Length: 146
Image (cartoon, rainbow, N blue to C red):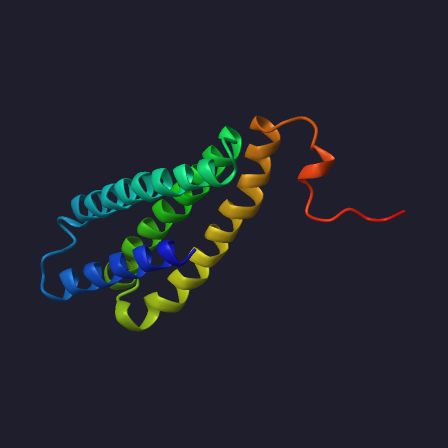
């Protein structure tokens, strides 16, 4: 989602800036990583709650659907925060490369893949697990005439 992409790029920008200003070094990168991942988790919980509540209202009280939207949004945001923070750390401290040049494309690709996975595959399995066993024919978007 666009929200997770924004979260990942903000985490990457903050981490790259912190590395360039020596706020993050090889001595304290673990503490920085935990803080950024914690912030992403809070953001995931907050946005997941808001969007899950919207999904609940929009679906006229479908709890399984709202939980699915919450979980998918949380997973997408949390992983975006992880990859956004981790990429500059890896490129700077492990590969000794310019994290500003190498991080963006990798993060964007990973966030798109994970976000799509969370929304489609994870959501499907959660709906199968939590949702109704049968679909009401009047609840379908398209009915083939036969």
